[in-house]
Amino acid sequence: MYKNLYLFLVLILGVNCCSSEEEIPTCLDDEISKYTEMLIGNTCGVTSLQIDQYSFQGQVVYQLPWTVCVFDSGSPVTDSNCEVIGSIGGWSNNQINDEDFIENAEFLRTVWKMEI
Image (cartoon, rainbow, N blue to C red; front, side):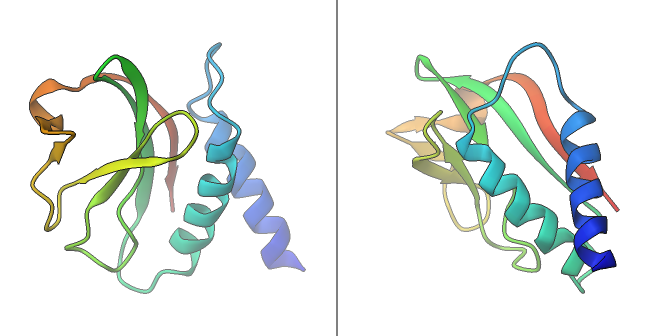
């Protein structure tokens, strides 16, 4: 029971740490819950995760964290409907729709960050 309460409190505090007047897509709530559980339960020394918002190819996109404990996996990049449009880092080449994400995406803000 305390673990669930702890997860809930961490989720609320984690979401509130980076809140602003702009809302994030509701579909990211499921992603945040998933990453919160992964971070709390990880055994590989990961101490923080975050979701960043970018402007890329005329739309607002979100870079999700890589999978905890899989250090060579890429970070998924999703649109505002949480549809994956590509991946950066890891084994991927940072190209999304034939355009280099690293060179062309404009960082807007961090929408969620959690540290343990």
